[in-house]
Image 1 (tube, rainbow, N blue to C red):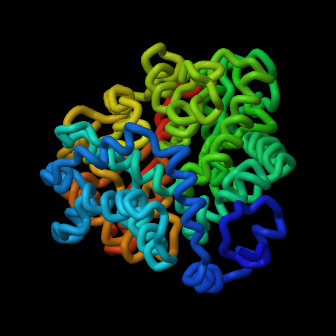
Image 2 (image 1 turned 180 degrees about the horizontal axis):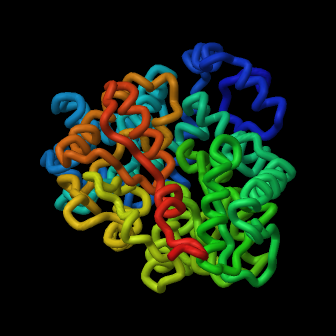
Amino acid sequence: MTQQSLCNDQPVETKEGIMALLSDKGGAKYYAEMETLPINPQKIQGILEKTCKSRTRTWLEICAHCGMCANSCFVYQAHDNDPKQVPAYKIQSTLGELIKRKGDVDAKFMMRAMEIAWAYCTCCNRCALFCPHGIDTGVMFSYLRGILFATGFVPWELKIGSGMHRVYGAQMDVTTEDWVETCEWMAEEQQEEWPGLEIPVDKEDADIMYVLNAREVKHYPEDIAEAAILFHLAGENWTVPSEGWENTSLTMFAGDWEGAKMNVDRLYGAMKRLQPKRAVGTECGHAHRATAVEGPYWAGLKDGQTPVPYLHYVQWVAEALRTGKLKIDPAKKIKVHCTVQDACNYVRNCGLSKYTREIIGYLVEDGYFHEMDDNQDFNYCCGGGGGLNGIGRFRKQRNIGLMPKLKQIQATGAELIISPCHNCWDAIRDMMEEYEIHDIKWTFLKPLLVGMVIRPGDK
């Protein structure tokens, strides 16, 4: 397999490699090469023998084909109950077949497996709640993605995203210099309204080390400013690291497990270097999962714990409101009908829904908050998770997948959706544009809080 080609089984580890992929508009050449990508059955079989352990093999063998997972899947519902979208069928026809055939498949099979693994499963893990045998198809699809990545069958955008993490230490081309300059810029921008506000970089022994999403640095720097304002108002002793500040993981979405370990090693390295009492991650679901759930095992930490206690942003906000570090002006409480989006990766997979409800109690006037049907642990995926938001080749499938969540939202009568997760926020934005919905707004927590908290000098 030539290393000059865009589509191959090697991760991208140079700026030149990233630029070559980016210059291929929409991945046209990349996908054309994929159609004739050589298959090495021995390599696939070697991966399976080394990594496909008893749990996965048992799950595949004990599946009773009972169909209990069918209605649990938003993709199945979005496709008019197509039997081919039943989670059990999807995993048996991909990973199950790979194992049966001992890796003896062709590029057409692998490309179809790629489509199913990324376009028709977001690894939201909802199906696991309904399986009478406890089979978690989402976990198995994450595993399948790893095999696909290792053999070169990964969506173009996620090949690039994986490369960005490896080269820049972030999902976008943000250098350390870019990051530190953005912190300085945002602090300066706030001085007139918030005298004394700082964004401390590399402060040792702080109470909080804040880590975030590279998209905030690249596209939404106001999000960094809002976080700084709230830490400032709460009187927190906080810092951000100059290195190891990115806690998202497109490598996890891509199935690049080696790259995923690199991500958490950088982040955990910052924790060990700065020795904060705890770390807080931004409003991002998969970043929380990658850092707090999967990360310790990628990093080889057998106790399953991060080097310092790690909180999702909703946990810090709930605590700050509960302890009075942040106080809401009663006159500014939300008085429009609203709902909250429960992100799969920090709600279903981490059990944090109680914190969002606690926050709602402070922010929303009684009678204006409405739960979605099948909420909290049972809530449906937004339709854009698992990397699906950013994959142009599968945009049609993504748009169809948005519909169950849109119906959920509309059924509440909400005019506002509070969404403490970047991917959910993006998916909700896109569904409103795609289906031309003009009477529903969406927001993160930070801008709401900045507009509602009692400031020094307020009466």
